[in-house]
View 1 (cartoon, rainbow, N blue to C red):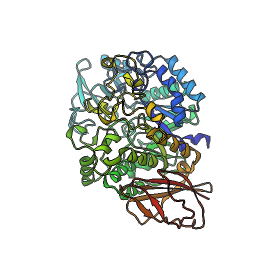
View 2 (cartoon, rainbow, N blue to C red; view 1 turned 90 degrees about the vertical axis):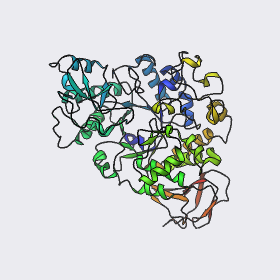
View 3 (cartoon, one colour; view 1 turned 30 degrees about the horizontal axis):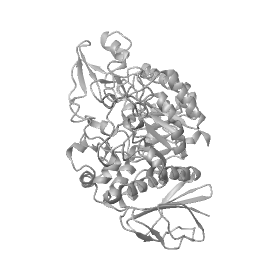
View 4 (tube, rainbow, N blue to C red; view 1 turned 135 degrees about the horizontal axis):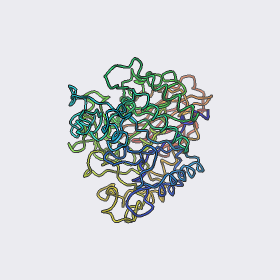
Length: 548
């Protein structure tokens, strides 16, 4: 059970550089983050997922790494990192970090050695060609911001492959020496106390693209090798993969439980958002049913928004159009021909179906996040309903500094505003003067207070994370009800996607004589004594029960 700690974790994702500045240079750092650990522990977070903090030219938010064995000096030192890990452990908080090993920055010493000498052992660390391959301008990850996937290097007099931007050269994972370097990276950070890794762009990692273009018979076997090594170094270490894949490929990533531990549930996320737009539960039901059954020791990571764009590619074209019309009515809100570069609260504020009471709908989405089968993964600022800055480039719109208070600098930094890593959201409904931690901590009905309460109840009822689940029929298209059964305990959660009150009955097979103990609800309702009673839900309301 201890090794499966992630089954009932509450994961919180943040970027060190935008969370808390301790030295007034306008950039968050590990000392500042350490000072905020009491807040995170109070919120109920059990695991932090840190965005890349390695030394970097920072042309892609730290995902262009130039040294895997150190901390970016803007964020502190290795000593600061170790102090942070120790302080997190004292509060019962685990830490996982981004593992970005499908590419490096072109400023990484490996690439510089590779391009400088054809006989260098580092030449085969990357993928080189004498001539630009056909289709170099196809299958772009960042269309509109990226022109091709092969770039000529004057020093090497060859073309190098880059799946992402041209300043991120693709590593040749088929090279055993590269795989050995990756093992060293994982060992280094595991020995420093991290509890695992969020594996960036996992589908590209297992392509095993070799220098001569030869196909690898079993590319997914690298995931088994990956897992075996991590588990050997630290038995309870986690591999959480970013893999927005087709559902028929899911078994290749989980195997029989011997490959990845967790993957983000992109298909459920997109269908949840579609249900919010449509005002009924039909889409989210479909999103729950689409993924195949996974091994007991594996888990889905559920989320509302993350640090990237909100992708819509797993929906039909008409569904995508519906999402765009509601959540991205302006062209500037879309990106990469596949998604939306916005945070959830402003999207809800624009959508006709949800704009009447954004905070109420946000509470509904947080209730869903905490009860849907899987492990909840929150993005920093989500607990207070932070907004975006559409004046920033690409995905930086949703990567603004944390809003701690209504004071100058939002409690993030005492530096001059012009010197901050990114502007603080300071205009409109989501300004730091209107949306911040300090104000919401003083309001028992705020999004922050309600979310903290949800997290506590979720942690006290592990069946939401561990249980076998099934949808409970309600005879209403607007209401989603589901049950989770584990170790003799049955939990039930119901959610109303409509802006009108609903009255439903639950079809709880085999539980007709049970008593319903209410755990949590969005409002005061008449007590429900038995499963056959009629149940009332307010507009965008939700209720949780334990059956006894």
